[in-house]
Image 1: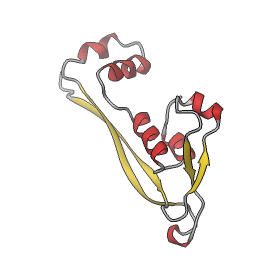
Image 2: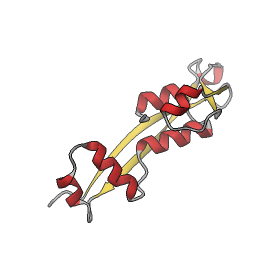
Image 3: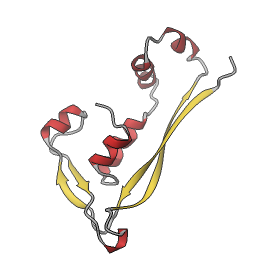
Image 4: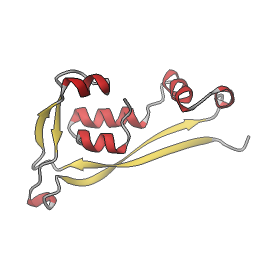
Length: 120
């Protein structure tokens, strides 16, 4: 009764805008991660601006699960998959949703999105 909400957050490395390299998403990855086939993504390359890492800075992403009328969902859920489905039905964006958006906008790489936790 004291729990009001749950916040999950991550820091995602951002690709260097000076040297990021355009790539195409392989069909197998597009299917596995539910992304558009043939989507253009970017990978880290490295240059003097980013100290040859391919990344400059980080961006915070978060998902917030407010327990206003969702307390019954916690009691009835068998596992975290049920809770994620409940969140999706309520229109709550998950960390995985934000990672997919960042990947498709060219803000981060596939390797970083998967490392942080983009769901299959």
